Image (cartoon, rainbow, N blue to C red; front, top):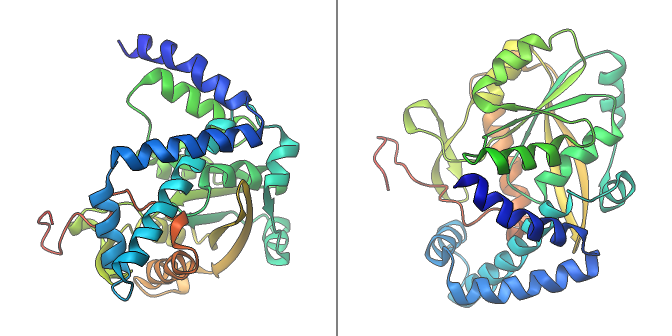
Length: 291
């Protein structure tokens, strides 16, 4: 059945990927209208926005959730577009700002750990980083349950040389790559289990945060880098790497996680619509009970 579903959907997905960008965004506007009518996860989005921005009026929250749905449609179609994007398009539409310190770390043959959130177009950020640096990018990800769609998305993510590794195997992958110049990327703003998490205040809410990036950075003493992906206009992004800690072993417990969480919150507040609000981020209390 999974194979049948894939072969029914794939020709349409590929056709969408072949569209010029101007047509892609006309289609996105149509999907946005459909999404509003469907009410897809509206309660989740509105609740997340309301709790995160208690100072905003209901009218302002409504504007934000509509802006988010518009962006979500763009994001999905932009992700599909990677099936057909060239190196030139990738570099032009996701501009990478290469800081001097990153060149220095590369010249010193020092691998890094990248930490980021579901902010901006994180799918375009990977190819852009690969095409603009000397690092072998290795992205931790959660495999899809449908093996056919999994193969398609893996091909999209690795087409320019990026490597991917299941999140459950990322430590093993890092050990195997210890003699290589690598950048191991982890998206660390998903829901975390209460008993395994670092607890902090994030967007005005008591929040459980993954400690994986911090633990890996300290274990290998790899500099930890926040990858800031800013949307400058529709279909265009700029990436600004920020060196959070060059020597993670010198940090105190929770310091890396706290710094990352604060930086991500700053960016979300600067442009709320480009974060993944339809995700059920706040599922658990400190006791582990579902909220």
